[in-house]
Image (tube, rainbow, N blue to C red):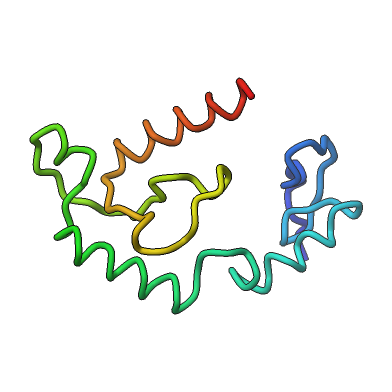
Length: 118
């Protein structure tokens, strides 16, 4: 039986290589077990999030809200927090809005810069 090609460990700061299917070296193998459980216990995901996401998309008519504020009608493909969770924003419909991919990327970059400056 052929051996797998050695690849870098999936842990961000690890420089070791591994041949394991899960992609983690022996030291970080415990992280692979947490991934096998899916999205359980990691906040978003599962039926409640999908229902809330769908409610927000319907409420916003599947249109990107930041683009709409700039008088442009762009289809939305994602739902994002107006006030980020990292800054204390709740995961409820009043704090969520439909957003397109490019707007989401820009907003994420701005939030990352803000977080680095703190």
